[in-house]
Length: 193
Image 1 (cartoon, one colour):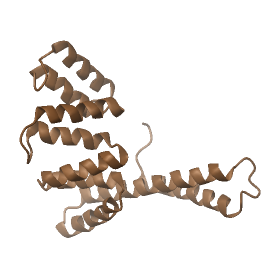
Image 2 (spheres, rainbow, N blue to C red):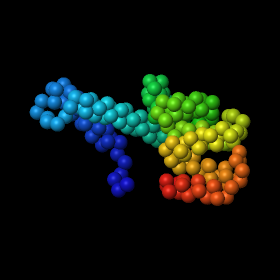
Image 3 (cartoon, one colour):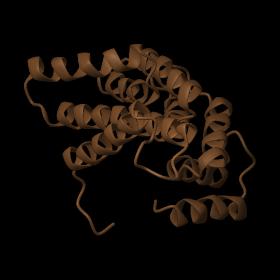
Image 4 (cartoon, one colour):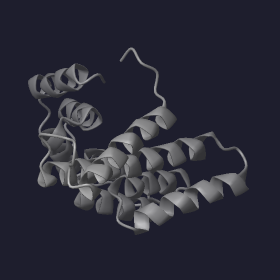
């Protein structure tokens, strides 16, 4: 919490770790005691995945900061490339972008891919929100509830927990239950919502 976010520095350090793992694999760990080939390969895989995620986040942050349609399109196309290659985080961001463009069917499609490919609870919660408010679809509290519950139980998604609290408070799909509503609001608060 005390360190400012710096994607370039994170990418730099993940790159160093990845390069070191690759070097160890290339030299069969010569001069580096205690590293098995399996461990080194795992480090290489994890750092490569982390680098891809950091790059996707960096490009999405640039997309958010752009105020020129042409530049936004360039960033969106880069995210789309990653999404089409199966990167769940890029698929999630394409869902966010689709929502911004009021393409809710596209958003649902991207969120579903992200949820299935990476277990993105943010995508699950966002799908629930689309059904909860009827954005481009009919309002469907049952479907919304199922998405919120899955996101809340899978990884304690605070947004999904807040929506569950609201559903229990207002009796949407479920019987109004103040005690259960308080439980979900409390759980969301504990997660920082």
